[in-house]
Length: 388
Image (tube, rainbow, N blue to C red; front, top):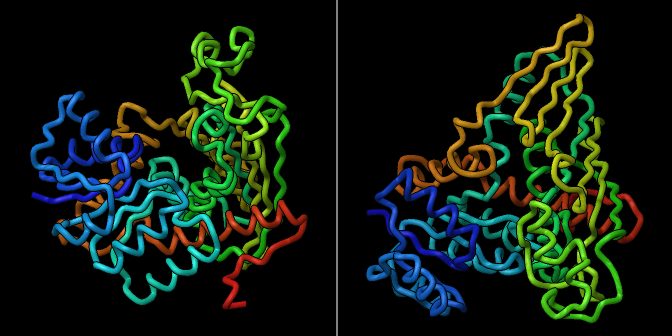
């Protein structure tokens, strides 16, 4: 049996452990540390989960001190990711860490320094880099068909963006903005495909839709406009959307930008343009990128599950359709790849992470610098403050 401990048992970690246990039944939850431990236990019991072998704690230190574990999942609120990761890394236990790995430069540097000292095995929650789509892109680029990549145009139009304005994500002190919440995934897969070092970033962000003068803390159920407001839970359901939270998205305490863009320059001199949006809906959704070389262009989109290769000097276009029936788990099959990798690490079969902490550090650093650039209106060097 592989004994798993969890720090912060939220929806995402619960979903991932479900994928892990389906593919690797020997993996069992041995302990959960969460401030809501009693409520979590009750919820699990109501769902029919046998909790007899699970120990519940309110404190992560107590849980780590009182048990032997083969692996730890961290799924706390984002501001606690780095703090909790340091506790696990100190013990040398294999760690699955949700992104972003940190939400401040100080926490990010502490995580960097700990990793340099201990080199504990860490898998960061970056499923996009290991999807079929991204792996095919890397294969095509490696073949030389498009030449060297000299420009990238990436986009993430999020059709379920309401979650960042109706749910706890609306607390910008917690999220530190949507570059860290969303672009961290995209910068990671772009870095992985390019294999180049990013050196500077210029960014902008806007808040044009999800703002207003409604009272702080207002819930939709208490609002007199809930019948007519297109963002009320009942109207979102009627329009085919999910319910993403209970708070008013037009209140004075609604945080986060609703669109953002960044230009990232890499060490070769080439640059990437990236743009994300959180108020589009339905078929306007898109997430993917164009990688352009002199000989050709290759593009992909996770929404349509297509990869296209355009040759520049011959009248040929190659189209690849990713078979969605082959997907196991979320994020285009990427979550399953991460769970398989983490299971192998916990069993001692490998120490190699397919989404290592170095990638999480690099992605978070770009995001923090993009946030700083947007807020200050300046270009920012993508470098550690103590290594410039």
